[in-house]
Amino acid sequence: MLATARNAKEIIEQLREREGSWTSGLVRVAGAQEVMRGRRVSSGLSELDELLGGGLPCGRVVELFGAASSGRMSMVVAALAAATARDELGALIDPADGFDPVTAREAGVVLERVLWVRPTTGADALRAADLVTAAGGFGVVALYLCGVRVRAAAAAWARLARCAEKAGAALLVVGDERQCGTFAAASVEVMRGRARWQRVPAPSGQTLLVARLARLAVTRSRLGTEAREREVELGVVGAEVGTEAGGSTRAAGRASTSTPAGRL
Image (cartoon, rainbow, N blue to C red; front, side):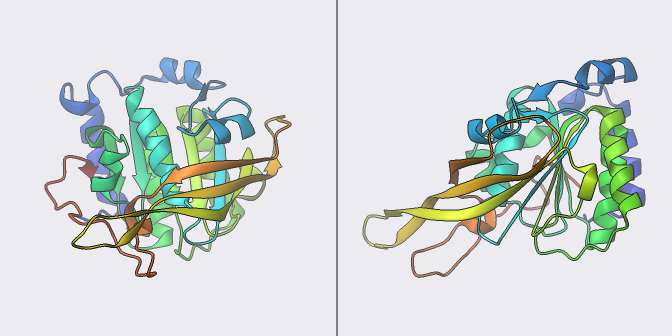
C-alpha cells in the first residue's frame, strides 16, 4: 500500500509499540539517542566513509547528488546493507520507486529491518521523511528524490535536519542536484565512470552490466575532512540493471505486496 503521511505516522507508532519481530530492542529511547549523536557509522563504502571523515555522521544530513545512472541507488543500498548488518533499522523514503528488494537482498540488505515508504509526490516524501526520522529508532534514513520534482522552502530542510539531530539518525538525501543548502553537513557529487560488463553463457549470449565505477567529489563539507575525491566501484541494483545494448530494465522478480520488507 502506498502510504500518505498520516497513515505513515500511524504505522510508525504501531511499530514503536511492538515488542518482538523485527523491531525488538531497536526502537531507542531518548537517552539512547544522545549516545548516537556525534557517532559515525559506515556507509557501506570505505571510499565514501573516508570522504566524510570516518563514516556517516549520526544526527546530521549528508547529501548525495548526480546524474542518472551514476550509482546513487547503489550507494543507498550499500548504506542500508551496512545498517542492517549492524542490527539497526533502516528506512527508505522512495517517491521515485527506484528500490528493488530482490537485488537489494542480494547486495546484503536485511529486508526485515527496512521500512520502505513509497509516497507519490515530492511533498509527501518530505512529510514522510519528517515523520519517519522524528519517530526515532532508525540508524539510517534515506530520502531518495532522484527524478522527483521537489519545491521545498529552506524551512522544510531545516526541520528535517532538526529531526535527524534529535533522533540521532544518519540522514541521506539523494537527488539530481543539491537541495539541502546549508543544512547538509556534507554534499557529495556522484559522477558516472566506466562500466564493467560480463557475458552471460549461451543460449542468451547477452553482455550484462554488473558494476560501474563512480567518482565521488565533495562539493561542500562542514565535517573538517581533507579528502575531496575518490573513485569507487558500485554494484548494480534495481533500475540500474541493464544490458550492453542499452535496454535498461529492472531486475526480474520485483517484490510483491507480500515482500518481508516493512513496506508502506
